[in-house]
Length: 88
Image 1 (cartoon, helix red, strand yellow):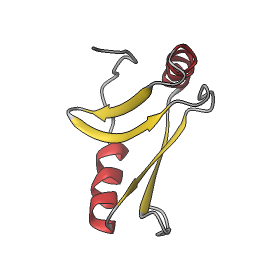
Image 2: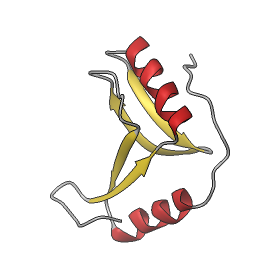
Image 3: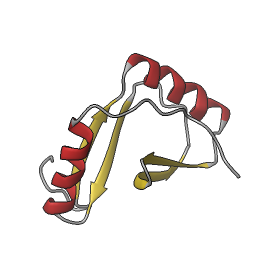
Image 4: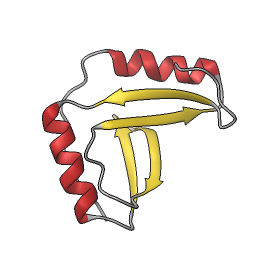
């Protein structure tokens, strides 16, 4: 986890090249909507898409160092590929 800020404890994620391309296309097509980043059934992040995200760099901010560390450990392992998509 990163250094604590006024908002909490940050965790940073760098997507693969395929993930970056998929996320950019998804965010470009869904500007103005809410995006939820899920890892399994756990919500890593939720935000309104204001602009496409071309960088593949994501971050979540959590209320405690323990929660941020748990996320960092989860995200450090190799995770299965998951599609970008929208569900009603």
